Length: 144
Image (spheres, rainbow, N blue to C red):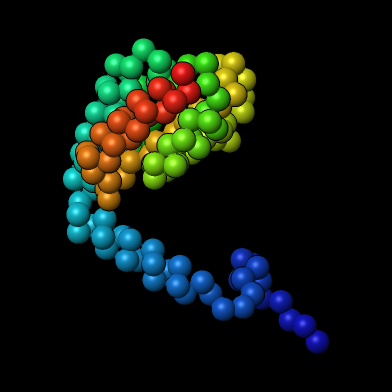
């Protein structure tokens, strides 16, 4: 005979995701120790710097540039597919995401095949932002 638990408990079979709970608790402790305001300030500084550097390049189109935004910068190298840009950046150890980022209606509205997206977080440095820009310059030269 099978007896089902009531409510949401009947949808939770097996061992709970203990390692996930422990990891999440550690992440919360880390964020609390650093301070959310400090994390925001650090990410904000990097994003603003990245936006400024990228917008200064005439070959680069920056999307969604704003003074108050999350730790991501979306851009394209004009006349080149974002996958090509991402592949070349990857060869230099620069990790970016490329594609439509689950925003197909937005990309269709903007008439874009996708974008390159660089993400910044508390563990990144300004030197890494500058390295992204430096390697993007080389990418632009290689793409012609």
